[in-house]
Image (tube, rainbow, N blue to C red; front, top):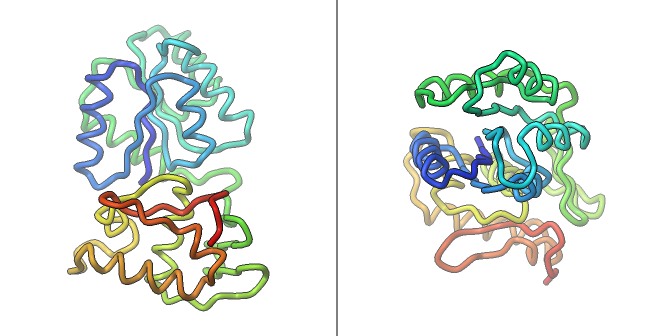
Length: 225
């Protein structure tokens, strides 16, 4: 999963990032509410949201996310254990509520629980410039022209599309786009990126960027080549 942590305590945020990364998740960290909202708009699979943020409260962050009709699962963290705070958090749009201090195992279990719940209106179409990916029909079109992709090429492209404008390492792409336990090397990612660029054509190939020494990203509005 692609998980966003919105937490202003740097030690707790880094600990959660390390633990969730060790469980094979892609993790982003925002240290205030406005930065967190920017990440949420870009698209993530789940959010761990602290209530006490330095700029806007976690309640308000959750409300703004829901106003955008974004159904991303939200797990709210707080040091407050009053019933009224829990009720306000759930009313603001949180899916679950966890009081600090907590055990990481409980946080991980609650994340698994809220991400298993079906979204009310799950998005099936992902767009990037002239390209449209339908994750239900498993189809890709560029300027209305259907592009034939292998299952592995489709999974890799879908992973990039779900994390548009974000740099993913080769290891992260392997974790998301290849079945667990399949013996592959990071060089496999480079080979499949080359396949995608060739099949998608020059316009979309220019949006799939190599970030030297890090990995790859697909640009939502990048310079076309």
